Length: 90
Image (cartoon, rainbow, N blue to C red):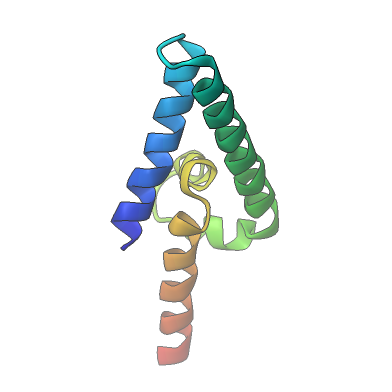
């Protein structure tokens, strides 16, 4: 399920970029830019609020920040759930 939602996020960003490049009609381009901007704003707020979970990523922190900005809870929620399972198991 997360794969499909991540693909939708990437499609929204790709359509927003296509709109910026002039490849979409003006109305569609404007709508896609607005949707992408709102998503990025929400994900930036998520990053600030859920940073403790973003830090749980086993790779570089910058990668985790980028993934959170792109996918929001689709990135940090599995990290938080895995950490909670580990804590419960101890």
